[in-house]
Image 1 (tube, helix red, strand yellow):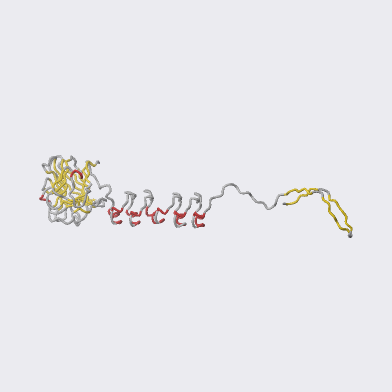
Image 2 (cartoon, helix red, strand yellow):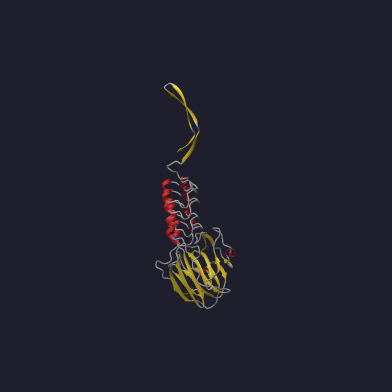
Length: 350
């Protein structure tokens, strides 16, 4: 499948779109940009009552667009009309009725199929429509915004090669009420949902899709967004492969983890010190969780001393001392006498 042409519908509220700026071939009437779209731009193009449309000149059999009627139409209201190149004849048209059904037509007015969605099309609600017109047949598929297929319509189309598409109210006979249209694309096969129109439940959980920052990947589950309350609370440091429901609540915020906390650090170790920021660089990679808990903060762990300290012993080593000759005087019966002690070696403890 290849998208041949795409129209984002992004502009200033209240202004009339410029065909060339939006990538269309031509504009008829004065549609305007209104609040509310299916992507982050939050605007779409509204076609008020009366004939007005934006037109493509392209040989393509498939079109995708998002449509919303602000209120239930008071009569037939066209979404899109398909023609041969140059505009004559009309091959097929798709519209909504006052009964809340979607209908497809061969040519401009010949009804060939009607939707049977329970409760009908709900006013002020976005739907995705995929439509193929070619080889004298047509098929329309109606989806809700979450991507569930609601109905498929099939039938004949007028003979001819598709070459022109008019989005909006291509003729006054089917323009009873306002219609909002967003994210139009033409392709060579079924196109599918726009890339940034995600799970509607996830968008509702955070209040608005614009609250989802780029760091939230497309694979993020609805449960993960709901668990954090607001996806904007997810810091860029949370990697795509990390479970948001685990990393977020356990540490309160990933930004509390200082660079010194390695990827291999366990959650229980981080929890023990209350915040990873308390772990100083002196905490070695081999520090145990028990050690961290014992000190309450890693900053109290001192660097490991290098080298091998001396091993103490209980018995001091023996030392040898030289004793010189000396004279000693003794008093014997009050008569002084002199006695000479010869030199000698003595061994004693330290």
